[in-house]
Length: 108
Ligand SMILES: [Zn+2]
Image 1: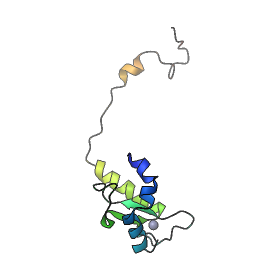
Image 2 (image 1 turned 180 degrees about the vertical axis):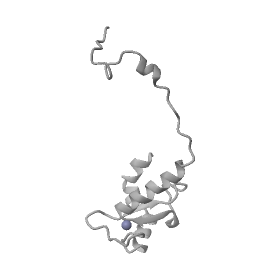
Image 3 (image 1 turned 90 degrees about the vertical axis):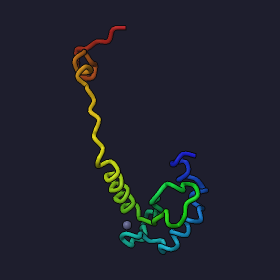
Image 4 (image 1 turned 120 degrees about the vertical axis):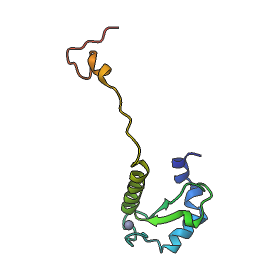
């Protein structure tokens, strides 16, 4: 099962580890102590090693805003040392293109 399908599934919503983390956190965000307000408290995966069979220590209850910040931070750390791939777009720009040349007419 793909990650997004799993997160939307009943299996995830009723996952005992997820429910245990929500209860242990008092249904509040572990970072800012927000109760979620109009949006629900989300459960963040600290690891995906046990995806589908999570342990309570794999999960952290977060409000939507903190979940977004934590996820963004972790992605920045994960990709910080990657060297960006550079694409050579010169050949695409040298020829006529309907995207860049208003006089270009496609001939089929
Ligand atoms: Zn929060």
